[in-house]
Image (cartoon, rainbow, N blue to C red; front, side, top):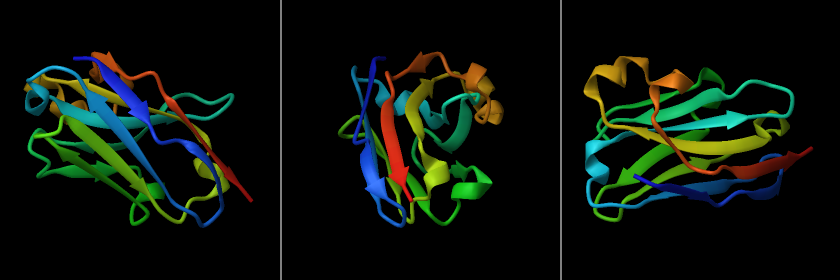
Length: 126
């Protein structure tokens, strides 16, 4: 699968952005998906994950209640709605995918995912 992330931009603190990840291919529903982010000088970190059908979602503690991950298997897309953005959310955001159910318990780990999008920059000004 090939992934294309979009939707990043510059926003003031307290604002909102919606990131999208478009996937190629006809087997999108066979992948579990995740969002990660990498701030300058920091390691890439887990942000959110969603199961194959979208029935299970998980979040980084610091984004719970502010970010919402969702997917539309009919459209081969995954979104990340980000509200109440903070300067600490500034990073390059990456979408990722993997299809091996054995790997699902390790959805928070970057090394779990075989497929990655190119990243989209999110900048939150104070």
